[in-house]
Image (cartoon, rainbow, N blue to C red; front, side):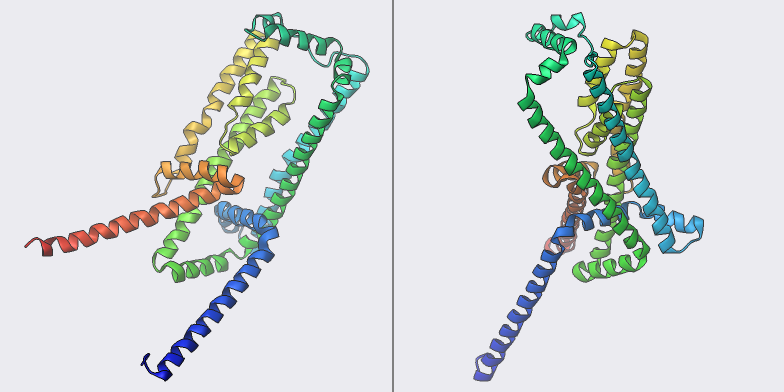
Length: 366
């Protein structure tokens, strides 16, 4: 049929129609992605949050016997309070501390405590550090006046960081609101997503959706949950020990724990500071309290992240680390999901090959 003039015309017409349809679909997809690009990060965070807190949403609507919209609104308000309350408290504490130090500096007081004599015994740099520290303790205003340009550059850098953190907090607050909307229509959206996955990957599509949801929930519990618990306990210990800038140090510990660096690089200097300026008994108690907390994530995180998943812990951990390095906090969740689905596809492909060998084996033996 193709060799005839009519057959060639039909093939040409079919090819042209197919190319036009594919071009229109590609154009629509490209324009849609281009329009969604400004809010892509917000939408990804909203999806991640809605999947992570879905068990709490389901529990709330069952226990409170309320409609989905009311349960989603209550949960969104709770998440907003948990997000904004620490930020407001931290900002107020930082402003109050800086104001107190500024007033003390204007009065000519000692803002920087004098260095201990043990600093002199430090190898290589002990004498220089001691002299610099002593000058800062005796006359901080003169030392600051001699380094105005460096302080100005440092202030601009800190200002850019603060502005970036403020924008991230606003974006996260917006993601919480959008997540509440997604939770209100979670049943309909989940059914549509399962149907779409089944359309794209047949029977395994629903399985991939379940793997993605379980991985996001486990990562949120194993990374975000443990980071919040660890930083909160460390912050309580620093407040009790009266460590300066305890709120800011706690926030830094939280960020470092989330990005998989760990709070050790911040807390070890804090422990050293307690031994230098606090009584030996207080420093010893603080060290005994802090040391187990620094190992808390290494014990609990693997248990929570691998719970109930067919994917090995090594694959999930690799996805967390590589995803964080490649995409930041969003990559923290996207990385494990992608590697988990890839591992499941690879395992299914290997298992299918083994079944073919088992079927062909007895027939080819004679």
